[in-house]
Length: 193
Image (cartoon, rainbow, N blue to C red; front, side, top):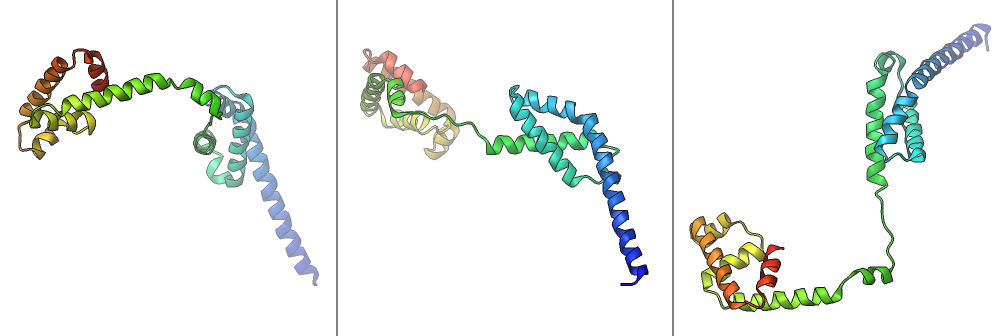
């Protein structure tokens, strides 16, 4: 190789090393200036978990260093770092959703099977009493309470006015209360669900 070629290669390598050194120096200054505020931002958003905040802050500055362009980011480092921190936090929440491990015994201990059975029986009795209502009352109550259909849509489906639908529901509930005096409280609680 000629000495001219060696000198130009050496010059390019030196220029790249100087650019890298300058870039590293600028980023180090930005890091030192912003590391505490970025850590605090993350610390309070992860429930004051120091280890998790430190991990996330490391991720933020790693991403920032990889994307750092001295001419572009040096003058507006704070908002740029906060954007990276916010996005890193969002990514962390998406990927690390907390899960709770349940064993079968504790799961069945917490379920009140008697209450579920009582509720199921009450629901069957209420449905039996609903079958005794007039066709309009039965249709309106079933659609409104069991299918979550709004009164305007019930009215449209059955060619009734919304006021008429509300009246059928109201009269049907009054009739159910009379028919189910023993189940009155259960009906109210069941239909309120």
